[in-house]
Length: 295
Image 1 (cartoon, rainbow, N blue to C red):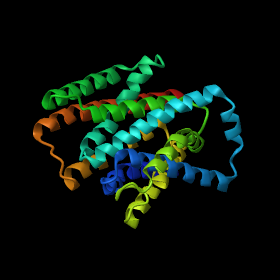
Image 2 (image 1 turned 45 degrees about the vertical axis):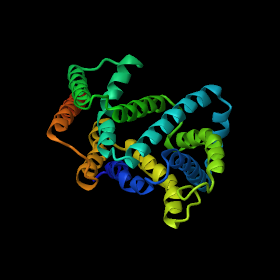
Image 3 (image 1 turned 135 degrees about the horizontal axis):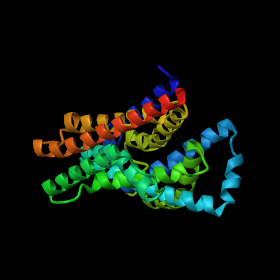
Image 4 (image 1 turned 135 degrees about the vertical axis):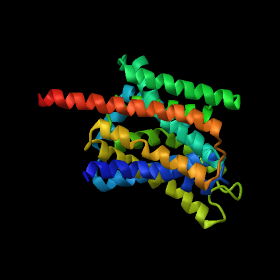
């Protein structure tokens, strides 16, 4: 198996298993988990940079206001995505979280059209239409928009768009983002220090270790993903991206026993059908390009 597939698939498997980890932090307020995720992620990536002696880019980035501005926005989007996800897992919405990452590729198509003026192909438009019907169905079923899924997909899609045009790689970008978020995170950490049984340092050693562990837990899949993305085609990467939400969905249904009736299945079915169309279109487009190159 190509090394790139192993790296990328490993990243998606780890992302898919995140609910198993964050469910053990359900007693800690989501905002506090977010703060720890920022602080310990920063310390972890700084340790990696020190090990690699890779600091030259940082001074140049800090002297460019446009780069700092772009990464300040991406850091805000990333923190919103993290906070929504942490809250969803802690409050029994694993299936809704999985839905967010199922529809993220379709949000990317929409953002590409509206922001980058890309022209979606017919099957991509059909996929967007089917996904929209699925969202409308789920909204009518519950009486409210599936806001968790839409918030996750929207924030991660916009974050991906900014990172696509950003001048920094995965490790450098995450370092700058967490560095920009570090000041308010450290202030919050100091204010919440030991204020209750669920705050750091908590009476239970396991809780403290879990909070510290969110740093490497965040950084390692991102680095695996970056390593994999450089080695395989976008078509392969696009197919692998469903590993994460599929694992989350399975955990939500069979491990966390979240309600998932037939009517809700119909809404998900429309979105899964949209993803099949999207994947088939990507595969067909890549195949046509390979034939053109070969010819």
